[in-house]
Structure formats: C-alpha cells, structure tokens
Image 1 (spheres, rainbow over the protein chains, first blue to last red):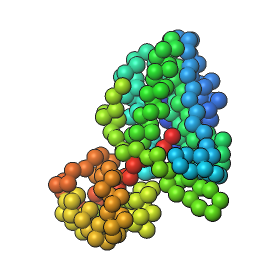
Image 2 (cartoon, helix red, strand yellow; image 1 turned 180 degrees about the horizontal axis):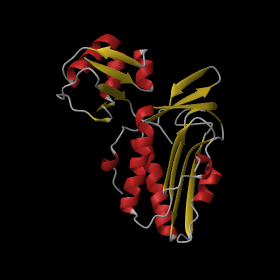
Image 3 (tube, helix red, strand yellow; image 1 turned 90 degrees about the vertical axis):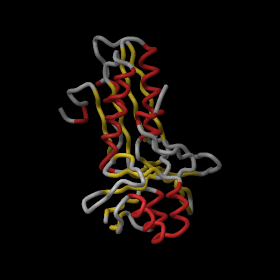
Length: 159
Length: 78
C-alpha cells in the first residue's frame, strides 16, 4: 500500500520533505478494537526561548538513522503499551512556513488512557532521541534552535 | 582513518558536512577534528553525542576505513 493511505502493518514511520499526511494517519489508525485515537501535531511557531519574529523553520537530520530511530521509538512504545492498535510517527524535513506541521504522532488504543499516555511518551521520546536539528529563520538572520536537548538512546528514556 | 560526519550545528561549526580523518580509535579521530576545526567546534563537540556506525561510541573503540563516526549536537526535532 502506498504511504498516502498508510502501510499494511501496525506502525507508520515517515521522514520526508513534503507536507505530512496527518489526516490520512488519523483515518488509518481507526480499528474495530480501538475506541480511542490521540493525535499530536507539532506546528511551526513564530517564537522560541528568547527569540521573536521567527518566519520559518528548517529541519535537517542524520538521514541514514532517522527513520530507524522513529521505528525504535514505536517498538519501545509497543513494549510499554501492548494494547496499542496503530501508531504513526511522522516527521517533516526541509523548510516550513509558520503553522505548517513538523511532526505528527497518532496512537490508537482500546481506551483513552493508553492512547493519551503512549502519544505523549512518543512525542517526548522523539524530541529526545531522534537525530533532527531545527534552524529558526527571521528577517535578516537565522540560528539553530536554542531549546535543544542532549541526544539520548531510546533505552535511556523512562516514564 | 575514518569518515567523520558532522550534523546540523556541528556541520556549521566545522564548515563541512563530512571529512576523512586519521586516527586509530574514536578519541584520536576526535582529537584530529578539534585540531582541524578550532575552539568553537571543540566546545560544541564537548556537548555532542558521538556515534560509531549508528550506535553510541566510546573513546577507545578502534576505527578503520569504512567506519563512520558522527558528531550529533543537542537535538531539536519535533
């Protein structure tokens, strides 16, 4: 099955340059056994710590290892919440205008508690363990995001 | 000798995305990178994770042709 409608398996991992298929991922996550779907979207914002007037973001990654890391996050989430139905972890690269979506997490589960917990854990763990860097652009300048975290291994991340 | 990949802010600090450097182990290659790219890079290197072929590296790990060492500064995905 093409990525635009979701993969045949239970996990959908995507790292790519174009707009992210958030609505498609949410539809894909629906299962007869799941009564809860939680979707988190991160979007490009006009300010960050100590910086106003941001006009665009530019994401780059360690290409050979980024999708593998996302898959590792998904696998660990399934160990922690075995009841998870489908799980989509999507991250965009390249230049984003304000309000465009940079990251999507969709988790489906039989009940809402696990869906919320797993989605929250996934976005927090993506931010800590996936080798991606964000450049913030404004009129007349640019700089790497100052809110960066030391890169962790997925196995280092606890509840 | 190993290939050193410089990601994100490390690429900007070094001025190149990758370089071949002499050295028999991880520490020696990183010493070479500090000498070549200067104090600004060295400071960032001190705050970065180091991977060898996609896994966290230790200073004494031997490296050779075909190995890829990577400098991964603090990340900001999401």
